[in-house]
Length: 182
Image (cartoon, rainbow, N blue to C red; front, side, top):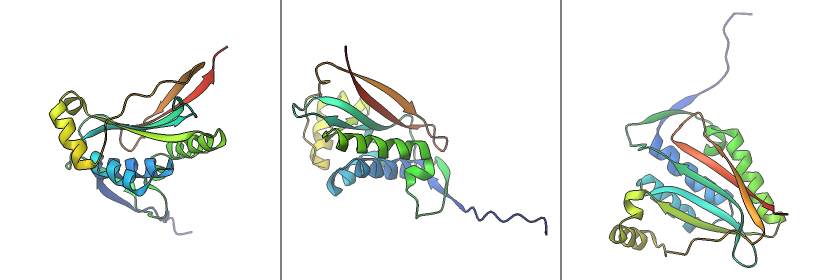
């Protein structure tokens, strides 16, 4: 044995903003959303417009039973870099955090097994959310229509947990699972 260890690991630098936009797009795609919604997620996070995107599992009454979310904190501007495994055969979410990838997969499978409809909601950063003119401008650019907040289904409480991937502490995945009261 030569003493040389060849692990074959190759990493590449990636701007955090690109990592976040890619993860947002993969997240909504893996939660059953269309290519148009994937594009909106990627564009909104790439431009720093969105704070989070939530995909709710809604029942026949349009009320939330479960949810999964992807969100960011902090800036993540183009100068902030992370090192990512260069293996493009694996999803970016999985390269960022395997537990988050599994959480996304399991949550969507739960939606399907319970007959829940995946319903997406984008949340702007506070400085945009609080400004009606900016919201209207960005809604028009992205093709979004404002919707009312979803209500939790009667007789349910949603218990959630949050995962913060080690690759970028400024992003997170959150999963909420409905429990029947009583």
